[in-house]
Image 1 (cartoon, rainbow, N blue to C red):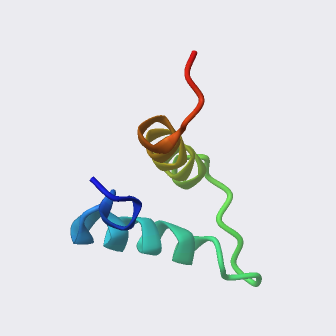
Image 2 (image 1 turned 180 degrees about the horizontal axis):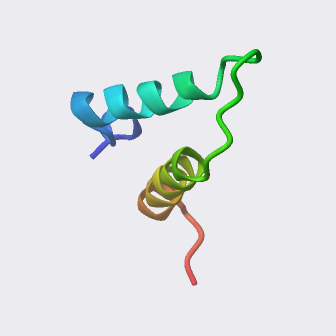
Amino acid sequence: MNKASFFDKKEKDKISSAVKKLTYARKPYLEDDVYDYLTDQICLYYQQNSSVSN
């Protein structure tokens, strides 16, 4: 799987929606769920694409 296609369209849309919740300066999103979700996605991507082996 190449890096450009790691996330399918549905997951990309979900990520975009989560990020959009964080972009409203006048209505800050204060819950942890979006941050937790995005962090999980970053970790999944890193685990699949990291050249660092443990």
